[in-house]
Image 1 (cartoon, helix red, strand yellow):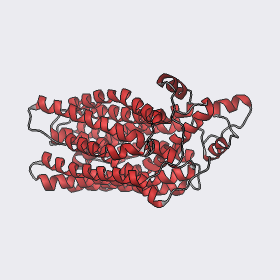
Image 2: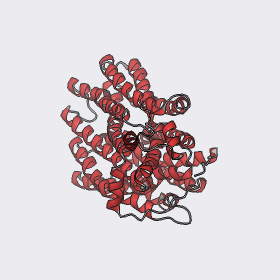
Image 3: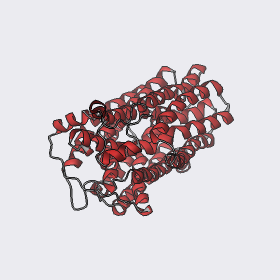
Length: 460
């Protein structure tokens, strides 16, 4: 199969799609917990149950959407049409999720469930095609890695807008009506996401063609479960997302209560994490040109665990300067892995095809998306339950016990999950050299290569 180079314009268009996706991902990972407790008015324990129960829907919708994209193609391609036709419904669902109706508590709880379910369904319908499309834009692993670098850079821009601009606009537009301010600010973000998806549709081209897979769903699932490298990535995705979301969800609480900051401090603290993550995207692309990407992935996440412990013990309440420095360092190291992970999924799909003779691209990406959202649900529930356990009370001075809990939730607790992530990646074997041999038909998948005496993949 001939490799394909991507133009800068197409990489920007591809990245625009992830910027649209991350309007939701960033809001779900970074601000929705704070919004639900401090703006919308949900009790932490009710918020926890909401996050957990709604994510059960993904157990059905994610694999189903992956199967649909595997089975059907159109004159516009297999994945691109969803960006065009679902862009507007996607934007509407985001707007409604951050709307606060004038209901009693039970009515608001029902509204929260209804809108959160809607945005989850719309998110699935556009995200599964989006994360799958990299496999048909090009079959060149270096181009995939480069495209994912663009993608993740734009994703962090979305994170910047959601976590920094949205709270500022909400405060400015909402004045004493903060709920209305968040609705207006996220409405603007929803409009931007709609436009970005449409731009992604027109800017990209599906070059690599595969025959639609007509294999029954259960057979595809059985084949996919034989892909040991894909299974490793699902574990990595689950534990990594839990760590990322717990930390991100608590950052606003940490800045406001543990550091004793005002709205400007909160914005600056969140901006520090986002800027560090953007710089990590650039650094990761540069480092992986000279250093094994799998080693970078594993070792960076192990280092996150160590930095997290240092930050917990080194930073005292109100110690803003040291907190900003260590949070920048932590956020930078955390995101060094991101471009590697998303390019690794497409390579794991090719690995699975070589191992089983069957290709289940849509289901593979759908499965990854399910584990990502399962991690988001588990993490969201953890945040709610932990806030309740540590006796958190919204918009009031917190007890020493509550402050310790918030500090643990920003550092040690998510750091543990990133440490697990790094340990799992030590078992991942698809390096650039091994993948190149696999594409040329010179290497068998890892488990088969060991048995037959053929090429053994190098491990980090």
